[in-house]
Image 1 (cartoon, helix red, strand yellow):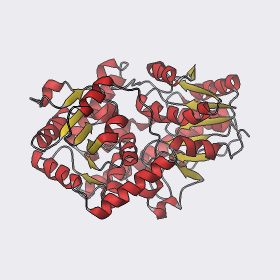
Image 2: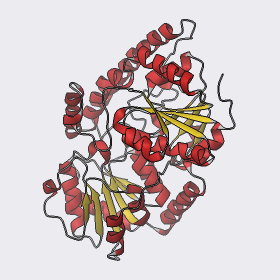
Image 3: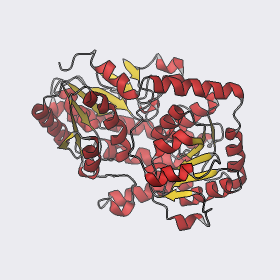
Image 4: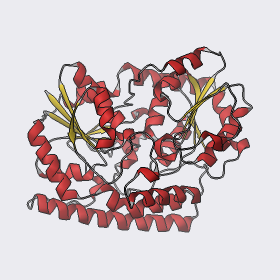
Length: 437
């Protein structure tokens, strides 16, 4: 049996997708990954076969830097970073404006290349990133049954009257102006309509007999795999989803890092892990405030600085572990608290380890994910641009002192997520459904 995984050329997307393939590999089955060159080493590290597929202009092997992107994409990335400094609505509006070129890049050519890859590989099952719209057009128009994986918060697949790009929920600490939200809603609706027209035009060229879509952002595959704990998702919204499986989390295996192991063994103080992921680590100004907030607490800190030069963070305690990259899964296993931007990998991996979070969301589905954590009591959200050092310190102290009931519920969630991995849930779901039409 052969599994084909289709992923954008971004490490943050490929790691969880490739992790899903591990169960197929353990069963002695063939796994092929179609992705771009920046993540080729990740495919090799997993031991999978690789097919070349460039789904977009940008790429990210681990930490994304504007100067490493192709012309045009570098300016777009700088524009995004600037928008995060202006606030939530400006960031969402910037992302809405860029959406068509980002998500439906060269759709007909990519769709046909995907069809050629399928013909070569002859997969029994296909897993594709939900945001790989051009690839999904190729599968849909060729009648190739597939599962698409929502790697972010489930709101990345809008349902009912929801509009992609307009958060269905956000933490109470965000209070954007009503008129600004109205403009964002209008803009997201206009982008939806334009995007859907582009999708339908490409679909018509690929398959003239195909039925057009009413909302391309609401299209999904034969099986929907949600890389998210169902326990954190509102039951009313769950009932509106198409056929689906909540994977819980796709926690990856990591190679043993001797430096990290030595650091963990060197002291008994509680560990706090800090990371803003591959994109938002560029916000050194926010990381510096987090550093100042944690500096006076009785903890040791492991901080992944990513794109930020550690010298921007001021004088750091010598007992802290400071590197551009750190093994997040391993450190979360030992951590009592994590401070994060609210990316889905960070949230799901922290929940699997039973680690409460202080969340500083910047963009897209990070707001909905943070709101769900706030409601469950497993996280405290703060606005990254205006949270003071004192605000951050108080939030960290609060999450370090979870009440007994919240601690018990978080432990129960962690147990649920570890008893059956996301990869095992995906394998069980896909081997029960027909492979191809």
